[in-house]
Structures are given as C-alpha cells and as structure tokens.
Image (cartoon, rainbow, N blue to C red; front, side, top):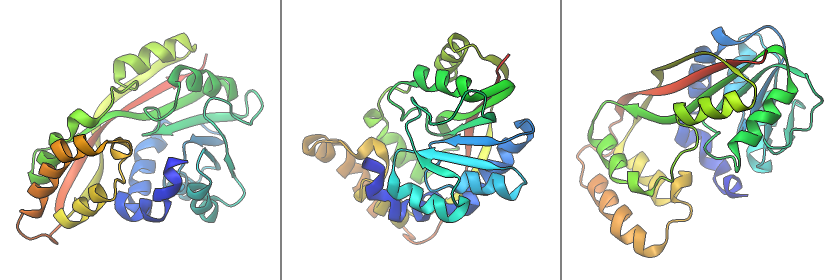
Length: 244
C-alpha cells in the first residue's frame, strides 16, 4: 500500500493536527446532526478535529499504517476498508466526508454510490476536492513547474457534480474559498519532493525525474533563507450534497 511508506512523515509534512482542525472548522457548519464517516481518513487529523467539535466520527482507509495513527486519535472507530465497498449497513451515517481523497480512489462514481448507500435519508455528503490554489510565490512557482506530472483529476467541480447527480445526490452548495494556511520553508518542500512524499511523484520514471523534477529541485536549492517558512493560504473547492 503506497501510503504505508509515507505514514511516518505524513503529519509532519502536511501540517499535522492543526491543519486537521482547520479543515474540520471549515466543514462543521455543513454537517447535519448524527454520526460522521470520513472516507480516506488517513492519520485521522480531520476526524479528530471534528471529534473535538463534538461529533462522533468514524474513519476508514486502505492503509493500515496510516490507520494506526488514526487509531490513537479515534480509538476503535477506524477500519481498513475500500471506499468502493464500505463495511457498514445501509443508512448508518448522517454524514459522509471526503477530504482531498476523491482523486485517489480507483472509481469515484462507485465510491459516491457507496457513500449514498450508507447515508440516512436527508444525510449530507461533504467533499474537499479538486486542485487547491495559493497566491503566487517562489514555492508555488516550483510546484507549478511540476504540474505536468499530475494525472487528470476526476474530482473537478464539474465532474464531481455529474457523478453525484448520477449517484442520486442533490447539490446543496459549492465554493472555492480559503481552507488552510501553511508556512513551508524551501528546505521542507525540498525534503518532501526528494523523498517522493506527494502521490503524483510515486511512479515518476528516471527520465522524467531528470527532465522535470531535478530542475525544480535545483530551483528550490538556490532559494535564499532555506529555513525561513513562507506563509501561504490555500483555497480549496468544497461541495455539499444531500441524499433525498
């Protein structure tokens, strides 16, 4: 499992529990009363943030190593499971949440149909999805150079809306708004890229690495103040759907 190999570094390189709390604060207003399932919970930082805000949250993920971290935050309310085959009865949850995970599932329409199955009538599906964006700076410029390595995303607003309609969901609302802040230094970003922590780098071949990634790494190494964090505010697509 690919995420198993990055589990030890995931929280440190992705903002940890503070980022999870920020994401939870962004989601909480759209939840309806009742239990919450986070699909693709990873290390459980968003689920833990929602739990701190008074919600009973369960989490599933394909990576046992990531879930071992989530277990420390959620206890026994986690399970190894595929988004396309959830181990829960029909109508078990009032809310299903996907946070930056729909582009990683093998079949997004199937995952949405499964989410609808486990939702109660009038339940909510919340998704943070699509490509995030931040104002241009020297680190964002480096990431933009790597854009050609990103596979086409199934979770653009248009594609998600179409798949959600086919799954029987009704759109409640959508926005593209500030979601989280991150202060990353050139050295931190360099370490993340060199270790291939972002999923889009996992299967890059040697020739492509030399042609595309190495120039970006060289640009990072040349930046001044290698250990000075560059504050960034990232905007994210958020969509909310309702099961009739």
